[in-house]
Length: 170
Image 1 (spheres, one colour):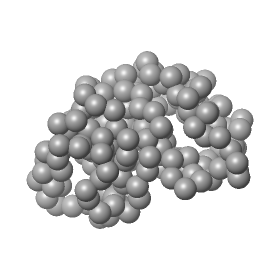
Image 2 (cartoon, one colour; image 1 turned 120 degrees about the vertical axis):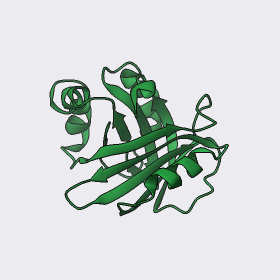
Image 3 (cartoon, helix red, strand yellow; image 1 turned 180 degrees about the vertical axis):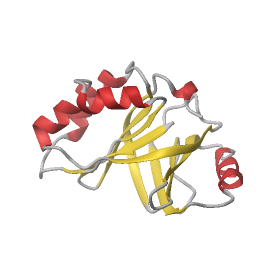
Image 4 (cartoon, helix red, strand yellow; image 1 turned 180 degrees about the horizontal axis):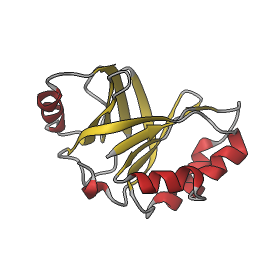
């Protein structure tokens, strides 16, 4: 599993909800994609991806698979990426997530226990821990069907969720 995220500060008045409503379906069957959460907060668009394989991620970024629309409209944003440590389904996996949280820190030694505990929360759709092995920074990303009950560095609204290969994430 691999993760990536880019953040785009939107121009004043930009209708990101319309963009997602009319284009979000394009990744609903994207090969190699586990899930893409179309996320917004304040005036920022910050989609988060979990990839089942790097071939799909590469095709998306530079193989004509979808990123060219972002590049045309906003320029080429820096893309953060991480290696997956673990991804767990929550009790709310069958429901539509409305919120997402991102918690950034150093690689937690007891991440399995923490992630398993979080994944038991009735409002959790999916939770994942990803690592940047260069700095040992960890990112815990969680999708929620109700208002999040954990402290997080960042909270988002989910406008759409593509999940073509969600069952291949581990």
